[in-house]
Image (cartoon, helix red, strand yellow):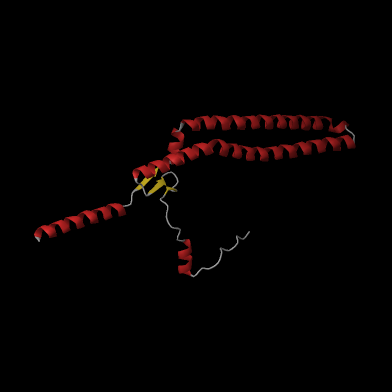
Length: 178
């Protein structure tokens, strides 16, 4: 009988130990900015983006130089121009100013698009590596120490509907107001 109780106690200890081990949460953190800077692909992406931006800057400088030349010509010859020629030249300058503004706006959009294009594969690669290491290491949650964002979490139940029910909230969320 004593042997049976000892065996039962041993089994309980082993099973409770494994339950405790399974319920233990493991947290990790990483500074994603340091990781990205360490990736060799980032240096090449930086160069690609910089070259693209310089190309746009060169075009903007050409347009600005053209504008400057037209303004100087207009100011130098304004006194001897007929009204119709002066008006035409002023309209040309104004149209060029509008083209320059439009170019600047489009250039900013193009740079943002190019930035996403060159950095997204790097970000995806880093994310995949973080997720793989997290799974291999048995981490439940991994936080980005540079931003505080949650980078990895195990699949789980979305409890939004349960919490809404608890709060008595029904129906779809309200439309955003502008």
